[in-house]
Length: 160
Length: 112
Image 1 (cartoon, each protein chain N blue to C red):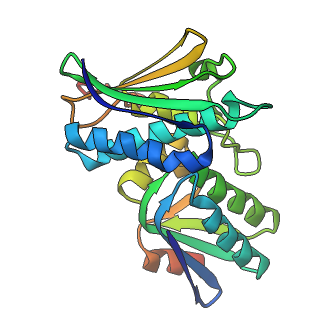
Image 2: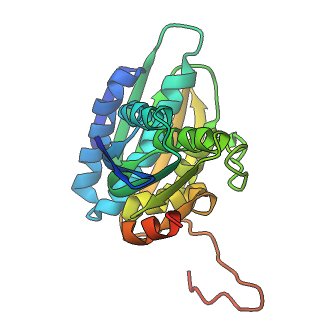
């Protein structure tokens, strides 16, 4: 494992810029595609906003740690760690992506982005801390988990 | 992040450039709500200069769309590309809203 960055800050919106910047720098060193780096940034923003909004609800804001590393030479690993209420963000119900404007909500979209824009997302509770581990393949240009597009009456020829 | 607005006959065009993230989106929200307060009935949002958008930005756009719908107005998007287009696709916003390829075609269609 190669450590790239490790930043801890108070879990508030004021810290968001610096925390995201640490991931942006780590990604820039390892991932050539600017598009993929934006995807990573989006997944990380959503995860951090989630921690900032909910991890320390009802009490003073604690810390959030963002750790970037390269594992096995093929994964960019981003860990987002807080010591707030136990919460598996990945277990949240999926958002309704089909409701009309009047009924549409954006709750749950952040988690949807995290799942769709990383190659692997895993949650664990360890030593009183929530750890969300996001992994991105270094050897893939794009894309991630593309939805299979199957049209009625036609075979799906996408060889992914 | 900037929002430039202009009128094309009855259509209000708002061009958003830069980023709509958890830190910056409230500025866009203020501008869009002001346009609605001022009575904009047809709002075309140009995202050609939008570099980045997260769910916080989508929330702002949805809030404007809900209000527009409630006051029987029309809201549409134009010039979606790259990252913004991908975010619209993944979030289902692409099929939720009318999206035009160019300002010209949007003005033509919305002006009818």
